[in-house]
Image (tube, rainbow, N blue to C red):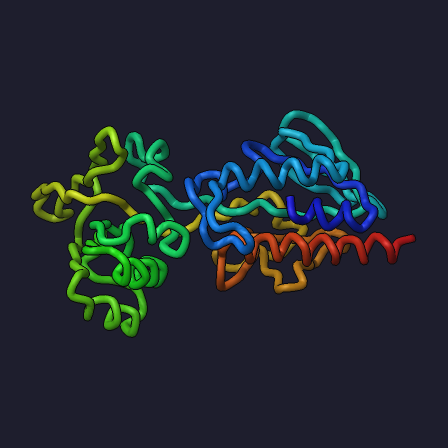
Length: 292
């Protein structure tokens, strides 16, 4: 939506094609307190405001699933699962990512109601409380370090017998007196109350011994899943499936640009996503102007 805004402000027409809900991951956050200029806003409210803004600027929208983009001479053709065909001079791929989930019953319904993915975004909501962190890589350790500064207790739940993150991060995290670890464990079920998540059921992967960990929140940090394969012929992908593009948001295909969490980057936050949208749109506008 930021890309559409900047394109429209530069005198171009813009069509936003979304397969599910406008706003993507941000709509799952019950409260955002790190977006400049807003003390507090829900993700859904922010997405609605952005949508209203681009519609007032003249954006067109379609609820469709894009299956591919074809190069036909000096134009690009976007095809959808619904059978539609949209022609454009430039295309911005802002496909985002999905958080890898645990695959447990009731898990998705608890996102934003006890299950979180971002300590920077949601850590303050668990100040002084007990949380669990699922994962053992760098991302999980970094999330836990931030949480340990705010929460009363942090319990690390790792399915392997060891943590795979950098030793420096482990040293920092495990020196905290309020951090505890359980390794070689599998999360089997989620416990809920009227207030949302209240605990997790785990079991030792070797012995099968089960126990319940009471907690106020669960942060899942077991990886992200980009969905870029359908566009691999247009833009190079790195080893993890992200678009291999820099801050310029360009690709190997003239007229095709990428923006947001779907591209290779070190920080994935709402502010960096909107920044990408602006950069990609301005690059696309320059490209279109050069054609004329």
